Length: 386
Image (cartoon, rainbow, N blue to C red; front, top):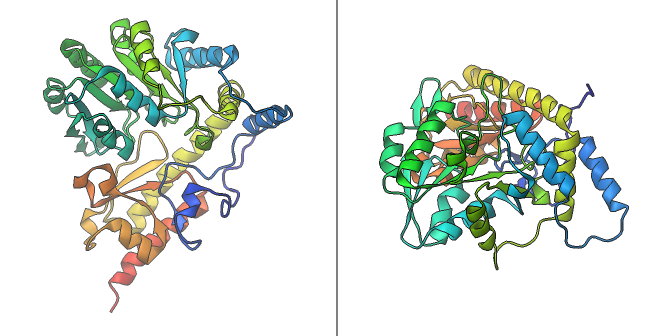
């Protein structure tokens, strides 16, 4: 197997990086879901080959890409789809907005589980829909869905915006919980819009199950949104896709792009093909490094900042940290930015009731991760000094 180096990362200062441009150079940016690692060399080579052709016009997905996605979903998740079931998009966020626009009318209710990343929280209001929120339940082992609250919410809703693996908690839904959700949605004729963008970053001991793969009847009411962007660190290439096996649902979804969602990035299509076709070894190596980072973060928090409550995520490179026991006056995000020079995502972004939380991105080198935790611990220790 090729050896990939994740302990070294290129400097991203002065590259136009959103992540590295928000704060001054002395701040470690650990906020947006964007990893610092070099892209898989197989993807870089594919883009270099495409650059040899000097025309960069509008593009469509080649048959080879569709077939590669079909193969990948069958091989990795046991989910059989057809090439025509795939609708390419410039992002998952446009996808769930298109889904709501295509099937709901103003005043309809959409169920969302909190905490949840902001674009999902904001989506219903774009279409004059009412968001119904139910919280995830925190147990000793981590976050889980609340079946009773879900059932009550789905009894009122016309659509359910599911995020699996869940952002920001990193929860991976079990087959039993997905079957429960599917049955409730079928009984109440609820559309399922499933954001599964982190599905390829599931750690040992868990498995990702696309909810639409449970049964044809579930797939008939489901719009599944996926992308290579998070896993293969190519979000700037703006390429995602929806899998919709129901032809009528797919037609309505595609019609909702009018005037809102343009064609997909040429280089994003090439990079996505290379990712799924050629970069599996890189993904496996990355997953091992991220799992090691996740565990290192747990150990360092326990050692240096035991007041933070942290449930190691079952997937993704995002950590959801409860800072409520630290006694910080005001926002923990503001405190750590000001006193530790660590830029985290503020918890209230994921729901108004989560102001005592922060989200930390550990998709970085071990050295940067260790530096961030040491800075945070130092800021807390310094606060106690006279």
